[in-house]
Image (cartoon, rainbow, N blue to C red; front, side, top):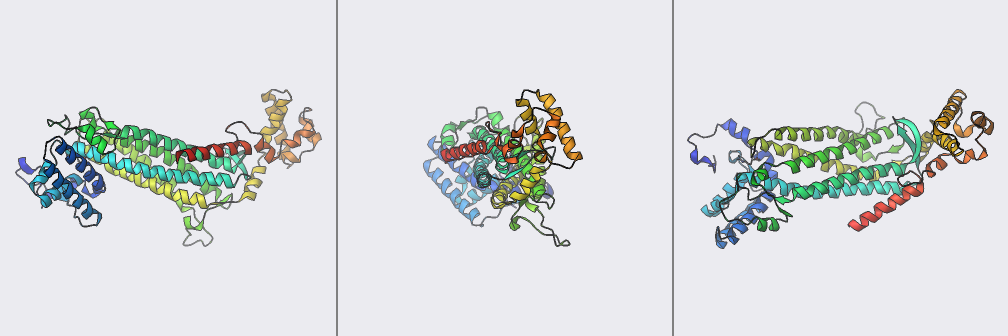
Length: 461
Ligand code: ARG
């Protein structure tokens, strides 16, 4: 059994089950690269401040680099009796370079070390997530661009409401993801600060230079209170919260893809590579990927609540409870990354059944509001126009007719303000293209938004 770095004041060994129960190495080993990166910056700072010699720092840095190589090549055995990633690496360092390795932990505690590691790790992962988000936005934008003439029913209460462009619907999700990206960018500002130097909780008696470490590690600055530095997990919570919202968005898109790809709607086809069959019903092509993403939204919500509950009412500063921060955070990262990645490809490959969408849009009196707006333009108050068109729709239902099929006489039996030009307003294309103000579904308004998105993206890259 490995000797524990903190064994000095103990006379009895840790109970074997307790050892496994309290260990975090099974899940925190994924922090290894960041633990080493942080330690190297710390060692260099200790030398710069003459807390250790340059030679000692060099020995420590080389030792850490060789450990990094070993872990990356799969030549490192993690030990549960060494509890966590920090002690596993430190023990290996001492084993490899001798007692000088024991100087690395000067002016540092695992409490500020772990706070640093999670920030470094999350910072890297956030970049990956932003990249995946961007890819999915690109897929949505391309779908919007290549289906500009596709009209579909727009729904409220999942009842046909008004016709909209399929492109407009895709851009709705583009906007949601734009806000998601904005939330991640915003939380990055609070994440990208160095907590190291807080020590266990009160700071350190050594003349450290935190700003130097921050600069080496690419942080925008240092945290301002040692108690807060070791006990703050807001940045992880903000990420879990932003992820919950992001997954909520994906779950809505999932739900729509599932509905649209059903035989009853038949609006879209998902590529075979994102679906599976049934072992008993030969006709089935199940939309597994959107279903799973819809399902995985649940665990991301759960992770957020877990972490909030772990942190709730914890007295300052560090408490072992906080070791429970990692699994919900890691699971959220994995789930969000996986969901975005698979969605980017699936959206890029989906095909649209324009005829079915248009047919469905023509049903359900989707241009009734256009008739009402027409009557309003003739000077009738909207509430009266609503009543007039309501009666028109009832007439249509009773006589099995669609609005554009009514004769002028039939129209005029509901309002004498209606004239021949009504037929210019009640087609699907006229209905869609008359909604021209910013954010509307008219082709020209949608094209403006596509151009805006393209412009914004080209400025960013
Ligand atoms: N494995 C621990 C965690 O994840 C590291 C910090 C331990 N600090 C302590 N005082 N026991 O929170």
